[in-house]
Image 1 (cartoon, one colour):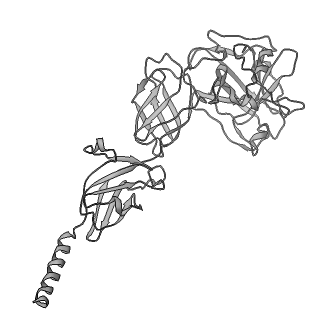
Image 2: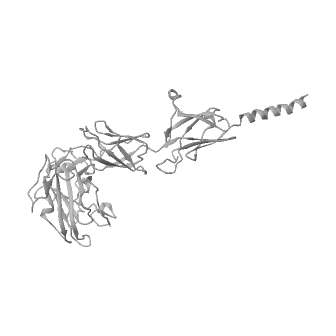
Image 3: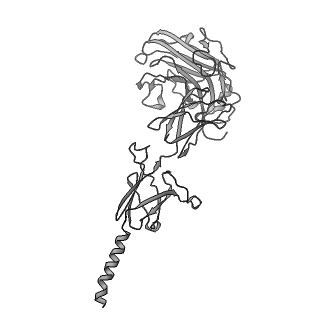
Amino acid sequence: MLLFLLPGLVLVSCEDDTDDLHPPVIHMIRTNMPEEGDIPIDDAGLGQTIVIVGDHFQTLQEVYINELMTEFLPTFVTRTHIVITIDDETPTIATDPDATNTIRLVNAAGETTRDFNILPPPPLVYSICKEFAQPGDSLTIEGLYFYFVEEIAFPGEIISTEFVSSADGRTIRVKVPEGITEAGTVEVITRAGSDNPLPLYRFNDREGMFCDFDDINTFAPGDGDPPEVVNEPDPVDGYYVKMQKFNIPAPMWWDGDNTLNLFFDVEEFNHEAADPSEFALKFEFNTAVSIKSGWFEMRIYEQGEEGYFYRFMPWNTPSNPEEYWNIGTRHDFYTDGWKTMIVPLNLFREKPENNPDGDTMTSVSELKDMNRFVMAFQNHMPPMAEPISELHLWFDNFRIVRISNQAE
């Protein structure tokens, strides 16, 4: 009797196993929060734990997220649920433009695939093109991970949804909304989160302004006629200074008509012993014509003293950034409209000989004793200099501001 029943038992057992062998089925993907158990999600970020809800998971063999085999613990798998954490190495569209944005399950009977977006890291804002862009202007934001962007937040929680992101996630062009009256950061908000903006770029912030050619228009005496102050065409926020000259030879040492002499007053910035690298000279710059030769010798000083120098030559990429005044790679520099320029104060140095390669200031408090700012265009010392057929540059809003993330 036992020998007679045994084949039958074996047969029944095999039939039961066969009934259990079905390809996996995914009904829903949700978070691992119990209170959100009935809420499906369509995306998740790197390192996030998710729950895959479905059926026939008891013979699960492999899980692929964006075609990366992802480890799972059998103790976190039941017939109807898989609890799994998205690996930090999972490809996203930020690292692989061909990322599938899928989850694929493989069990003993087959496989199934479901669309599911794997979000890149939260965005990082590296720069905004112009800090004083006006309502209706197109503002370019540069950074990383600008994917699945939902909105752009301006100071005062003014929101813009009129934007276009680049395919590589590195730039956004956004229309500046109406109603911005406060100063602050520009925040990119995506489905993966938002940036943690640093004060390197501040929107609509007039702190530290010592010349804006509108309310603060402080020309100091100098050689030659001062450059022309205009408010058209295309101002950034009112009047600005225009420097235009034709057929500049090489060498050209000094030209008073292309020299900006300003009074300099930053007494309100009495940051005792503050590191100069935490502060910067900022100004708006517009190359009406591209430039690839010459430089502006920027000088902050007390009248009768030498002070500190910086050689502004944006067309030059030096081989050694610490010796930025030496010529490296020359290229045509063009801003394509107004652009905010930033010069950290620790780049201003004494000038014992021709190059500003002396000591830097030890503390921002030294600015209390300085009362002049000069920006003189020069085009000398071939082969550093090349003849210039037209110099046509615009400047506005000179200011000294904090750029570090440290508390005041």
